[in-house]
Length: 263
Ligand SMILES: NC(=O)c1ccc[n+]([C@@H]2O[C@H](COP(=O)([O-])OP(=O)(O)OC[C@H]3O[C@@H](n4cnc5c(N)ncnc54)[C@H](O)[C@@H]3O)[C@@H](O)[C@H]2O)c1
Image: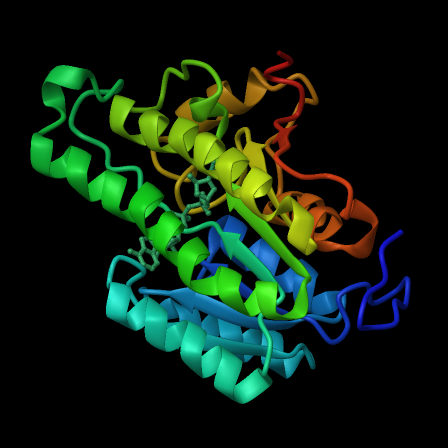
């Protein structure tokens, strides 16, 4: 195993690490932030939604080291300021989890291509893919400086194979994030930095709580493990990828989907 600058306590594998998690006001991002913080990381929870502050208050009241940064990740200047202030205040940035994304729904169930305007396509690209690129580009120098870093990008089953509920814009970004991650993984492999993807299947979040209870139950019934996934279950996979033990794992993609897709 390569040397690290921090001792590893098996109960708190992320102790001393600073992690930035985007889209952490709720859903999967909150689950990821919580698991990383419970395992010792100081988490900078990023979101544009003001509910972020309630989420941060609630985790802090449990003794977790979490702080909130209310920014829109498509604002490049705000992203630069976020990375600079993280470096200034903590003198490190070890873990970056790109989780924030949007999935606009049009009137039709399937979000067919004819329904997707160019403006909507561009908006989805800008949040789900361009902002991920910018966040990686801006955060990587801090990881290079310590020759240690973990980037985990959240893709989707929709980026792996056609999914009835996803639009082409969303699927294109979620496939794109896999290619971006592989390029970054190969560029930074020799510098102690790993870059991996997690592709969730159906996970309980505000996104999947849309639609009638009957429709949700119907969708959940198709999952081989017999239930929808919990946000913390994505958090556990991210925590593994962000840990010391995953130092030899880079450019990979882990499907966490209850058995719905087994390529
Ligand atoms: N829930 C699922 O079943 C599922 C399945 C596959 C993949 N995913 C992926 O997991 C991730 C989280 O999904 P979720 O279900 O928790 O979604 P969600 O919509 O519940 O949460 C996304 C969060 O991102 C934030 N966000 C969106 N745009 C932002 C911006 N421009 N700047 C800052 N914050 C922004 C939102 O405010 C929200 O809090 C996404 O990348 C999604 O594509 C989710």
